[in-house]
Image 1 (cartoon, rainbow, N blue to C red):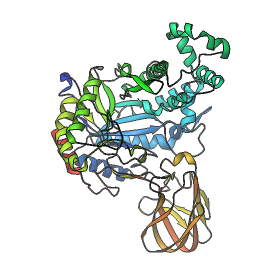
Image 2: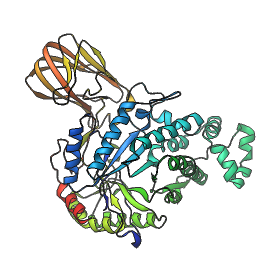
Image 3: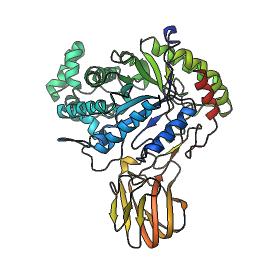
Image 4: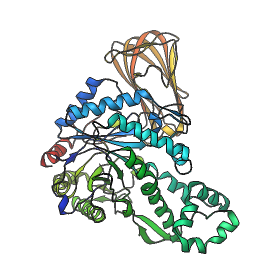
Length: 524
């Protein structure tokens, strides 16, 4: 059985011995927060409906993003979110009962759970310099394994969840701060232990500042930073993964990074030393038309895109004996930050999808879509109130528990409110507006506030409300207050951006290329 369509975005071509490897047809990330949340409903019947729909499209696998912070809100002392583990176990068991492969991307960076100790990037930075953080992370991984060991196929970490440190290191200009950071994250000690000649020739840095400086990103010495990063992944994190899971893998960085001498690119650093994993038969990868392109807004032909796919596939498989899963097959991408990336010409995408199926079959062990169903980048935590008022400030409202008719009952002068910190707002200026979608029923009036912007909503019977407000670059506050009558609110979407898949719409209706992927899956 092959695996198709599960998650992120690279590609890989395999050597002949992979030609008839296990076929993984995955669907894309499921998660508790961003980027997608199919299983936020606490409704097993809805989970089953979703998975059966996925199977009907020919997919046989899912990848679940498992945020570190949401599952372990505190690391000192350790505190766990048992509700999250319960839902993970339920979904894993359900997938197994439906004969679907189940992959977990553990240590996922993003989640929206409030009041976490060291949220997102702050927590991940501690992995470089805190034994306590490493020990807590290890305990989190073991707990994930305990909950999924009887139904999960492979767990993996991704390079991109840790890549923020590279951006931080590129921006070191002050020598004292550079030395302090280098020492704090272990880069200085790594240079001393592994780069004897460099250490000897730069001993004056230690004499003057107490540690080796972070190499300047405009010099060839910055390749040491990439090598240190790869060593951190392979020698520090992966051994812990190996001890935690029966099958522990990695999504490797398969893009080469430019090495500069001043403003001139003089070489490229390859992360190929991370392509071989001895603790799993799989290596995860990604692909998009942007790879190898100038990315100045160009539009490429089907043949050009297939050419980059072939090139990247061969490059990866020359450096690994693992079966490569293209965890992120990103054939389209409307992410604002990628607006200048190369894309396949609109009228050539059908031809590309028709011709790529044989490449996927012969040269990989499967693929996954980052976006299988369009999703709104919802800024709200606990947006359908399955956790009651958790994440909200509630006053005077009545929580009605239930899947079909549950939600928050709002009466005059009662209200709910949620503060949205800036770090949730990935797409603040995506198209200049913030959208608010509400699922309402009852009879009454509500005052809706997003920051300083207000709107009155009149409700009679069932109603899906769609409002627009000026976009904010930073955080904001959403408030919903009862003015009259009684209104039941059971779903809230506040978003600046909707990720498009062109496979299935947000309402699960088929989109432009659904039949293309059904055909690809049938051929795999």
